Length: 195
Image: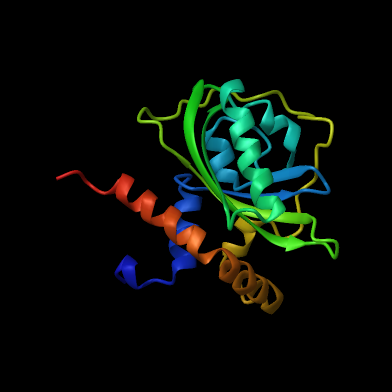
């Protein structure tokens, strides 16, 4: 089957499984973020199935890029922008700093309007391939280290006959479809052979 005729979620899953596209799921109240496992492995981090504290990841953003990145996220969380988008340098575990482009969207808010859950994508814009080393030692990676989140974003792309999972996939992907389409288009153009 021609890839262009596959459902978009299957193409997103294939990109995520190949580690070319990072999917993330941020739970504000828990202060945890979970990345798709192949992406986390690509960056050289152990325990790819586990969520990490948001502090662990904030410490990896280049100091000059941290304030604008957090400001963009806060602006979206406040409702001032329709989505979150930022380009920043991220310190990996083995490849040094890599230039990342990230997009996200709040998909759940509390009754008071506070952001509860945000999902998004991350794309590596660095020309050189990643060279993950042995990774960090096993064990806690931040004060608020979390367990695997229930139905993290990357799990919604799995092939399953489970009706609850299928309904949640349809709900979440409908909320972030344009975000994923933009990221998939950017990824496709980066991977296309140059004429």
